[in-house]
Length: 126
Image 1 (cartoon, rainbow, N blue to C red):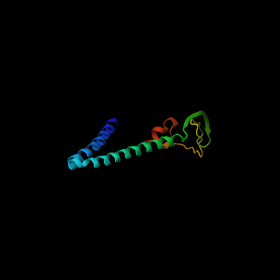
Image 2 (image 1 turned 90 degrees about the horizontal axis):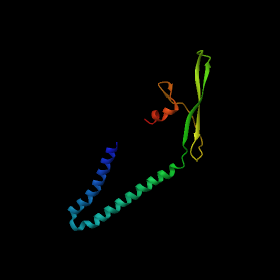
Image 3 (image 1 turned 180 degrees about the horizontal axis):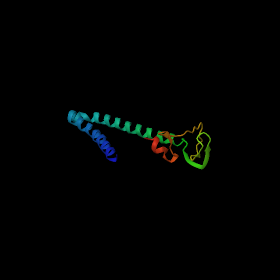
Image 4 (image 1 turned 135 degrees about the vertical axis):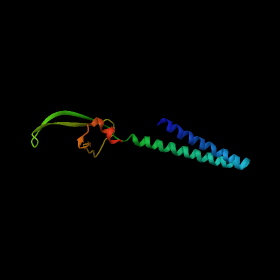
């Protein structure tokens, strides 16, 4: 994965260097104005990239973050199946300083079996 990112970055840099070189070859001494205009576009592009990344980081600081744990595993007798089943409760704790509103909880299933909360991130993010 890191090699792919390195190749991508090198191709972008080589493309940005190639354009002024081609302008010099094509327009000779008249290419100075075109190169300055191109470099201004590169500067604008860089400033927009930095502004977008700062906006994402700024807005992420206001999102609540949660810690989910299982607690109190209790045996419960099931009347319909006449068997003992385990029941557990979830503890959801807001670990950020930002309040959270309209929280909904649910269960995550895989092949009609519940998944332990520690494995939710692995199963859902795929």
